[in-house]
Image (cartoon, rainbow, N blue to C red; front, side, top):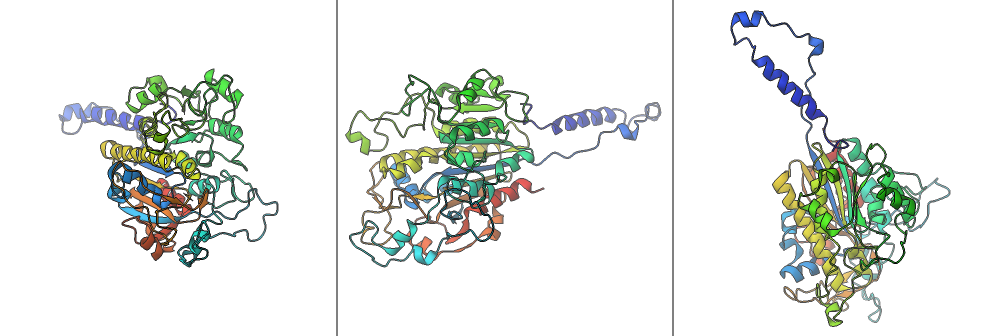
Length: 512
């Protein structure tokens, strides 16, 4: 794959051949042989170049997962807390992370002079258990505080991707609307392959923040065009297909919401090229094609050019599917799965196989995007289903690292961009911050929701591998209430800010 393969290997191979030939006539041979050999001019000798150290940086984001969302999924699959369950029991570094945006504006400022920050995280207010109103949906003062001044996926994604806080709805731009450099660009500049994978529309807020710049997250087709033409990503995978519905049924007419008609036609005609590439995007759509890629069975043609994987669904993978059995709608995985969409795990494995062709390494962002949607709906069934698929994707990454790479050359970060719906237990309206109780494997837990939108709570941050020692200098504070009331077992209450996740990734990518 010419656009990401390491040209240095040619120098190393040439040197090896030269040295082996020279060895045939070395001073250890006879004096006569040595005397008859012509000298090689010094200026013709290739300069030695050591092999570049491989670096893999993988960020995985389960969008909109309040603390309880992690545990209700593993209660269902394993009957245990997430941190006592594979794959999270493999991720020893466990912290909190603040997610607040720069302010609560929804558009860039016209006057960019002066102070603009308005929002923060206050640990004392977050854990205030004063009973304000027993009849209110949010009876405790802390519940009310955490459900105010929250971020959105665009601002949070921009913070994770660029290290800058910004206004709500901003995609890779600062509070004045000026473009910011993303970790994807930094990875590209350092010779790494780059990939963006999501279970929702490929031009939705989180994937967009890692590969586009736009003043509004709602400019989906414009953002999609940027992603396909700016050359920041070698691989893009997600939904947003113009020819299929949210239940993966063929549309009578194409709907160009997330990709423009011109871009769609150019993709199918193999004339759409990202900047810096001599080769047009390859397009894969079917579940079978994603599975071939995941199983290392894809054709060379697919592996040797920029790759766009567009799932045959307008919105996501499984979250919008209907259920023949009405009662089954309230039990995780009881509704029949759509049979023409891949899992996020399959997409993740395929992306790993593709990006790892670059011998210098890669950067990859994987998003489980529909956890957030299910949380907006206060839908316990769908939260569990979407989080389980994300968990399986994390497991696939860990297995890939241990079979094909190492933790010495790979950094894995697993987190969420913000909380959503504030997932707490059945008695949490009377006992402040009571967590969801474990009902046992395969039994639906009882959940109380205190929002239909995002929260300003600390969220989980997991890390493993290369560079994690850098977190000690990035820690913003310690929150004892996080340990007391949440179940991120193994955390001591230390927390970073979402902008520090970018700092850590940048440190690893740019390290010599």
